[in-house]
Image (cartoon, rainbow, N blue to C red; front, side, top):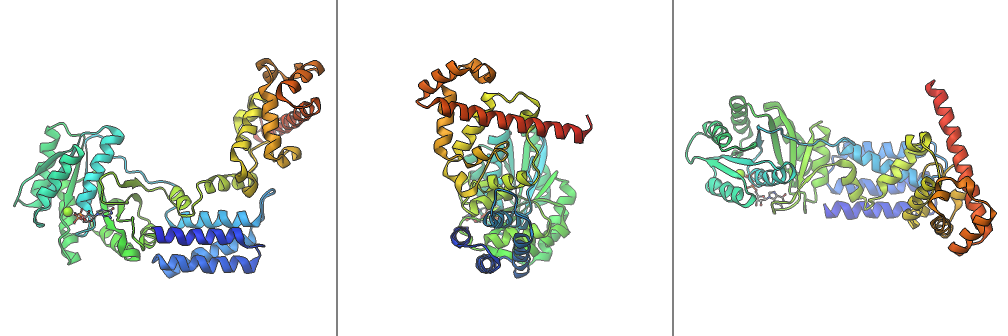
Length: 431
Ligand SMILES: Nc1nc2c(ncn2[C@@H]2O[C@H](COP(=O)(O)OP(=O)(O)O)[C@@H](O)[C@H]2O)c(=O)[nH]1
Ligand SMILES: [Mg+2]
């Protein structure tokens, strides 16, 4: 994934460097984006659709107040990449106690390794006692491989060499349940190069075993070919979730993810290495944030969305808005630091007061210092702050009475605007 990541980072830096984000610049940037996605083996049609949508949206959508077209472009890029990889909702694989999970997939895709990774994951996450069944009697050493892995991850193991895989799977479930196992994971064979025979065998086992969940394990290094593979398995068995392995170092991993997401299949995990804890729940938003090298991009997106639909959090609208709440908001603003300048992030209530919107980080620190010199009573009941208290507060915080006044003024304005907002909402809600 490193290659795709560095490619996308380059695109993001282009977005930041272009002097003006006009039609020509957007097109230039999107050509680069297309190149990077094609290199990652994303299907050309998918690439073109994505780039067209980002272009249309960035040039066509109105820019919310306080933001720039540059930020709109970043946001659309982020959102369309998330869409390409399956959308915002995360598909979690959460087997209930007592369930049976069956792993299917081609030979070498990483089923056996993944079975052990899942056992470790569910043991750690839910405290489950997990049992692993070796239903692969074709591959020499399959039994020993899984037996050792089971030991390594603290799972129970069942297998019987030379026996019919379906029979072993059925026996395994019974036996392991007898040993008090909460979750049984069946590792199957995928020996066939000939896909038809494999699919039939998988279908037969699923019919007899009736697992609670069929998990398809796919090798991400095949790139967009993962899409048709996913479809073929889907037709044969009711695949519930997909795990894409070998995402580490797979230059074509992006293409694999996109192709699988396009089939409508749900990707639950990605395998990111040979070690047993190298398994990650797959969540498109955080995955894309990482690809774009911006953990904060999600914040930007949420901010822009919030600016479009200015709805204040209930807590601020319904509760009392004292200097305590005000300080909390200022701290939030200060915490964003220089990022706030780049992205022009402004917390709620603050986009409403021009002096705060423009406040530099020095001002913010000053205001926070002023409030730190107030008593708790003053913070919760600002109306008691008279001239003599102001003098004391100014001295205590190394500021002037004028600064204290300014802060109180800004607070009152924010409070008033929040009240108006609350009132207009009540009217709209008809209560
Ligand atoms: N780099 C990397 N290698 C993996 C990953 N998952 C599995 N492998 C390797 O892929 C090879 C085949 O794995 P195996 O579990 O035996 O595949 P199976 O034939 O489907 O059971 C082994 O060498 C594994 O170590 C992964 O996420 N990353
Ligand atoms: Mg295997």
